[in-house]
Image 1 (tube, rainbow, N blue to C red):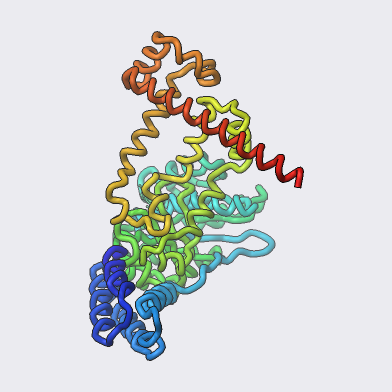
Image 2 (tube, rainbow, N blue to C red):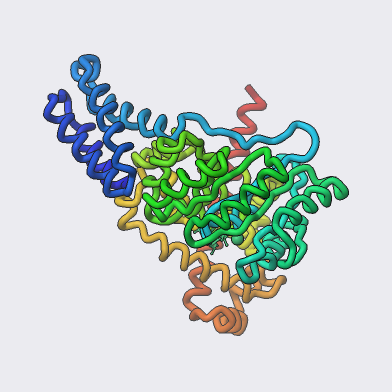
Length: 441
Ligand code: GDP
Ligand code: MG
């Protein structure tokens, strides 16, 4: 979707003055792009109509930068289609809040339970995960593994107890153990069926959740909209979580769900790891779809992923020239926390997929992994004092063998290290100079 729309917009941007025909053509392309991305046809029709009307207004046509104004209108309308502002989940100020996760099998509910727990804990909540999927083999175990990996407690009663009773007991358990958010992981089916819906209704009635979040797989496009509509009719959901937005089909489902159900998208799942959660921002999603980059999300992501203290220590060490291979390793780990390079690049304005063609992300990532392997094959003493390796061909050989590379690669790594060190030295000289001047003046 993104690249199609970008094409259409690029054509307009370059134009000095627009005719009605230009706009008609562009709207036709926008329409095709949206339909192709599996956006609901009613939604597309309305969208194109609104945007078309706004664009043919005299202000746009006669302005000096009509193309850019059209892009802005498309951007604003995309954003308002998805709900304009990001919406928080409903939580009680005091006492125990209950969040119920519902959705089809494989949508990502259990994973989302872990992601939400991580997110809530960052906001000083004390979450408890409750295992109410008693049907899917190993579903309880899966939730336990998720809980363990993030150190969040999981309440379960095996698969012989009714989910309604499990949910109720889960809340009691939270009371007794000082947890203030209960996240209920429910069962899904491949398709919507009455039995499941009745069960979910029963759970809802019994625990009166503060928030029912429907988890939807964004890769299912049009289907996602049908699922959302049905679940909303039966359960009156409070919000939607779109998972797997890291896949290729970004956009389609996001664009239709809010328009068709009136329910806001609150979070986006953007990967399998339990950190891969974003608060859904309609305006940023719109910009991302249009390929303008998503700098704000990138910054937020960097802030939460990088341990600030660790980063500061690292930069101090670099400035003090103590910088060694251990620091190298920890710098690379910080980078990795941000996610795959390709994903980071996508969020940088202007660096959309089509422009990244000659920048081979996979190769850079492979290179990083290789370097990591080489450092891992060094002894601690060698990492702290790289000069030990420099004059010892036996050490070089050993490291090369350990990491599956040849000695030339080790030499290259050492050279790279020397160069960075030299750079640091110059850098330090420079900043000292600045410091002196500043204190004199
Ligand atoms: P459930 O049946 O609804 O509980 O779904 P699960 O949580 O078990 O997830 C199903 C699969 O989707 C698992 O393999 C997850 O790792 C994967 N998954 C969940 N969320 C995401 C996401 O945001 N991105 C990607 N790429 N995979 C996801
Ligand atoms: Mg599950």
